[in-house]
Length: 137
Image (cartoon, rainbow, N blue to C red):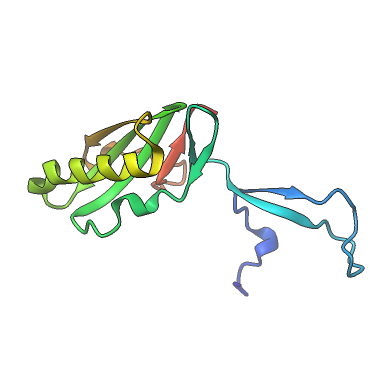
């Protein structure tokens, strides 16, 4: 809730599924959401088209990571760009991230981990660094 900027004027980018009926059971004339699917670009796709979201915990607890960004060009594969605060943690970081990706996404998912500078991360038009970018829509 934000009194200065009402949610009705805020584009969240969320995808949702509406109920087929036009009116809420309470009598209001507004549409009713059946299910919130999530943001179109906050998930990646496995080879079988299953969407996997909530990937932010892959680098959880790794305080030496300043930023990370997952970019998917092809189903079943992704590139993870990582900006480190402490360069001497690169080998350990790659190992931990690979293990976490296998646990979450399976052995068949191909993840490539790249260490980059902050200037190399993709940004939105507004300059925001997005954690997940799916470019194979």
